Image (cartoon, rainbow, N blue to C red; front, side):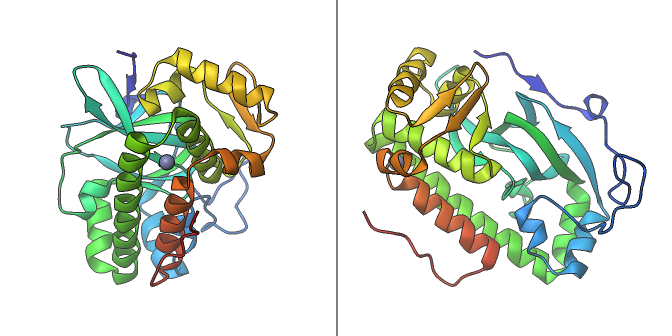
Length: 269
Ligand SMILES: [Zn+2]
């Protein structure tokens, strides 16, 4: 099993408060945030959450939540990517959700649970806003707008998880790798994804050699450019053609959670 790092309070080095930038100057907008869920809230509701959050750095392979462990913090990811995974057999971890700047870590808290049923691991280093579980629950129960946003987000993750089940059972490895890259690109908002072959293999529950072979084919076809720790999508149109339709279903569900649209528009293929 891959060695992973678990986060506790001692492992964090919180960055300066949100009203102060790296040069020690006041920011022009203390409500500025890289998380899309937070940025869609009204200023009043956003402030309700932000005044209870602190900035934290996310290092590769750190655990934000562990299966069977009480949840201390929830996270609004601002950059980077993380995977929610479940155990399949004694050692194998299989990804059931890919997270990034449009995402929130802490769904059990929204549903009244304090124990995490899954493990959440950082795959691409980045930053997040974290909030204590008690503080999140307080805001949720006193701010209807925050509650509605989080419940819409739960709906989006249910769609994503069910789509990944279908994807993993019905679609080829090439399609799944293409889907993973497109979703990760969407979550990180960057064509270049900082991740190793081993991390993607772990996320998809396959051997690293299989990922290496798939990437070699993609690179030969001009779809990607790769280095030891980065994958860059160089032909997005062809990558979308190679992928199954699952990334569109997942992205449509998240647009719904961000904008609160009454129905999903999913392109048929
Ligand atoms: Zn699929």
